[in-house]
Length: 231
Image (cartoon, rainbow, N blue to C red; front, side, top):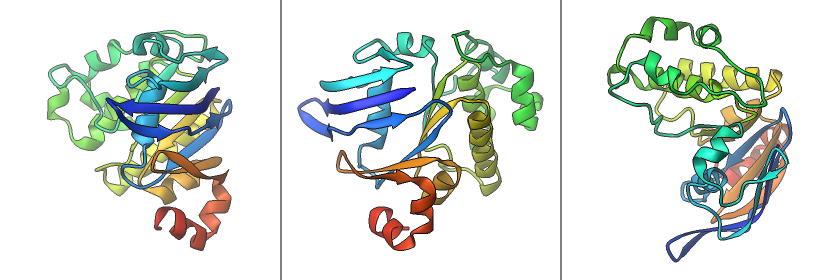
């Protein structure tokens, strides 16, 4: 579903990514872990075309999307849940969701299904997003991504700033996506939570991949986990 091949990405003249190669299979959940500043968010930005790689290739659903405009990539069925939510604060929840709806070749979702996933969402529809809590904004951000009919969803720090109960809801949603055959790439500081829902894991440091393997193996190997990610 997603393939990054030796991408090199820069901010100005400063190189951030030094050739990481990452793959996400159809219906697979893959975690991308590492310390702050390792290049994880830049990897997501490279996939989305927000910071296009200067070298290397990005392929999604069999198509080369390297250098494509972000809106074109989104219309192909690539969803994104950003770390800062990026909801429209002055619009209601209902309007935020309405403008996100689109159809791709992948499974379509409707607003009633969002209410099944997040039962509290139905009671927030008339509220402006600027008046929501962080957890409520995350419900909107995830719902908005799903209403775009994605084949792959990129989660960037989905548990950041959330209460433990909301974190559990987010991870349960990721499991549901996997059950529906939707691929997920999750960047997450809460490494244990990410490993519990993932099939495979990549660990990044200083813009390069330093470890790749089964998520269950890294979850079970505490010494290696402490060496790679400090927990």
